Length: 468
Image 1 (cartoon, rainbow, N blue to C red):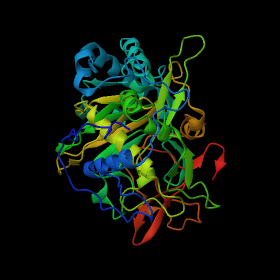
Image 2 (cartoon, rainbow, N blue to C red):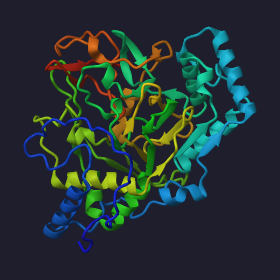
Image 3 (tube, helix red, strand yellow):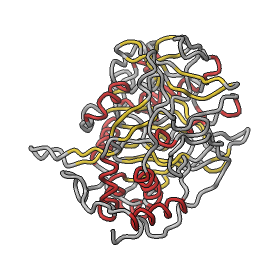
C-alpha cells in the first residue's frame, strides 16, 4: 500500500484518565492488544503490516466505495449543521406531567406503558420527527429539560419509558430473569458498582473505566442521566459511516477484514457447554431497494471486549486468537471513532437516543464522589415504522432482544443489582438475583460475569423459546 498508516499522526482524544481495571493474562497467540487501545502499539502494527504484507486494494464486491447522507458527519463540523439537543418547552413538560398522572391513575403494570397509556398530545409529533431523525437523519439526539429531582425513582422510570414509547414503541430485553424468576428485564442501570461488590467485574459498563467505541444490541440505544460523575464520564458518539468511508478510501483491505466472519468470545455457557462462540462479520452491507425507498446502507455491530476480553475475563483458550489484521481493524475503528467523534455534553436529566446500527459510542473514564455519582438508565428500543432491515447475520441476536417480550413480564428494576447471590455452580439453573453484568454490549444466554473467591459466577437467562 502507498499509505504508510491509516491515520495521519493525530493524537487520540485527550480526556481525564482514571483507574483502569486490572486485566487478566490473554490467551497464547493473541496479538499485542488489550481492551484499552494503545496508540503506539497500533501505529507500529500499521507500519509493520503495510510494509511487509501484500494488502488488498479493493473493497469486497458489492460494498460501496463511499456512503453519503446526513449520517456521514464529523464531530468538528456536525454542531454547525445540526442542533442535536432538543429542550422541552414548559407546555411539553406539563404534557409529560399530565401523562405521568394519567398512567398512575390506570393502576397497571409498567410493562403496559405505551403511547396510549402515556399520551403526549402536545409532544408526540415532535418525538416522531426526532425518531425519523434517528433513522434517516444524523442518527442521534438529546432531550433536555426534565428535573429528575422533582420525581421519585419510579416516576422517573415511568416518564423515561413513556417518552421513549413515542420514539421506539418496542422495548428490548436486557435480561430474562429477575429475583430468581422469569422476567423480561427491559430497563438497565449503568453505574460503577465496584464499591458494592467483591466480584471482579467483567464488563466496563459497571466500572469507572473508559469504555472504548462499541455498539449495543438492538436498533436504538437510549440513556437517561439520573446523575453525572463528579469528574469525567463524557459520552462520545461517532458516525460509523464516516469511519467506513475513511477506511474504504485509505485501507480497503480492512473493509474486507471487517466484512469477514469473526469468532467472538461470548463468555457464555449452556447445559451442553456450547454457545460460547459467535461467528459473524462486524459490518453488514445492505443494497438499496429496487423501489428507491431505502438507500444503500452499511451496518456496524460489534463490541471490542468479545475479541480481547476485559478485566477478569480474557478471551478464552477454546477459540483461536484474533489475527493481526483483526487487531488492526479493532484499533482502527476505535481511533477513527475518537478522531471523528462528538461529545453530547450529557447533563443530569438528559435523555440520549442513538441509532445503534449507524452510530457507535464510547465513554470517558470518570470519578464519582459520595455526593455525586454517575447513574444512567438504559433502554433498547425499536421503532416499527422507521426501523432498518435487520441483517441476516444479526437476526438471531435481535430475536433474543425483541422476540417474545410481553407486557406482563416486563420488569423495570428500581436499583442496580449484582450477582452476589447467584449460584456458583454452572450446572445448576437457579439464581437469586438479577444479573447486573450482562454488559451493555450484548444479551447472552448465560454470561460469565466475573469471579468471587476464585469461583466463576455465571448468569443464566431464558429466551422466549425455552431454556438454554
